Image (cartoon, rainbow, N blue to C red; front, side, top):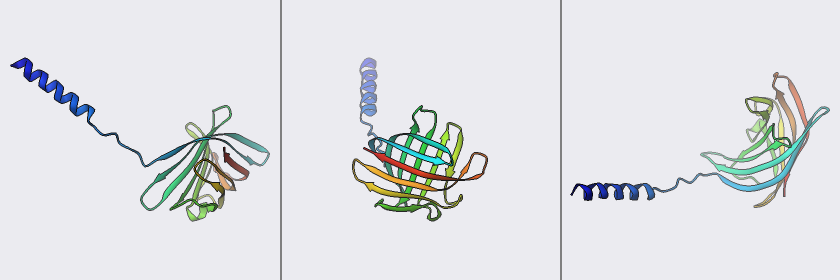
Length: 156
């Protein structure tokens, strides 16, 4: 009788474990291959885009474009905020975009509504492609105001 009871508990535990439902995120990722680039004065930066995804939140959604430098040591991130993401201008002063360029543990450049005007122009967006330009005021790791120019991103 004890064997039957033990066996029953093992089977019940196995059923409970395997019947648990998977949690699904509100994140919608799409495979991305593409590139980004920007300048700060005479310094030029570039790399590849490794992900483009959208998250749905309460009150606002986020479109994230992220990647790395070609050597993999630096991280690139552009975020757009809104209900939908049609082509057009997204301004940091209106809480519509943020930008960061960093290494793990240290932000090199960042732009948000607190740093001055930074604008992302979304030119193309569909299920497989996204492209645009960006420029504006940012802050470097020493809290100096700098100008990001000639910013561009594109996926194929």
